[in-house]
Length: 433
Image (spheres, helix red, strand yellow):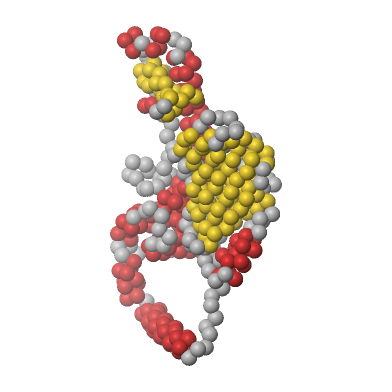
């Protein structure tokens, strides 16, 4: 993903911010985004339930009934379909793990033709007409992605180390990941979709105006024309009708030009100081922004499971926090597991920070605030016994930090590294420059 946010997205995010400020609409955005997250969580739970019911039907009902395995016998009831099911086993051959394919009749509610779907808001598609709740959520994702370093819209926080047992902790974590995935999709939007998104902003602005009982200003252009015209053209037409304000803008542009000339002059002076031997103060390392953050995580767990595989859809999460607040989040989409012998399975994954993370472009001094780190692998069984591990983080491609994972009994799916001091390692790196 590109680290540079396209200008059209930052401009659109700014316009969304103006609407939020003008109508004091942040609580309403919170309500809508939370409603979307509830619907998304319900969709995923429905799909998991359906998958489990289908699996049990094939592996228990079909596997024990030859009649249901016979396609020529025809459907036992109207609407049943003859389909296949891939059964995972624990048997391993020289070519890899063995799978069984079960053929059989399934009732209509468990057939692939009506498998529950997860609604994807982005990329925008004519095949799915966004609801008002979804339109708010799409704009919230554009806002969060395009205005880094400002207050985000989502009303949830990543749970701290001491409140994972609270009833809402897991749900908040899930919803945070849902929204992060949506922000990640914003980064792949094309400039040609700006008009579509601005038409969504028009709809949302009308809604928040009604919600706040505020009368919208009269629009000079029709909605479809406003969507297609360029920003430059709009400014030109507006300027013709506002001569005094246009003059003020010209003066402002002139002053910006003068400011640019002053900056260049200052650069020349600084260069002169270097040539004449005068020192120019170096920018402190702690003040540089966090642009990239990657991590290699390896966890050794006591287990006799015979495994040596990569799991492409089961990743890991690494969170750095202070108190109950997550300050930096890294994640991955896959992981590996390997039996090392002596009842030890080693799990590993390569993680990175997404540009949608709130730590993006924050100063490196943020690292000095970290009090603990938490690791979660989707493929590690809950409450496992951790033998050891390492977390190697690299910030901005040149600042390496290594943390040791102590032996511990996992709390559910969480592995915790307490009392970390990345600030000390950062200071040592500064001294070595």
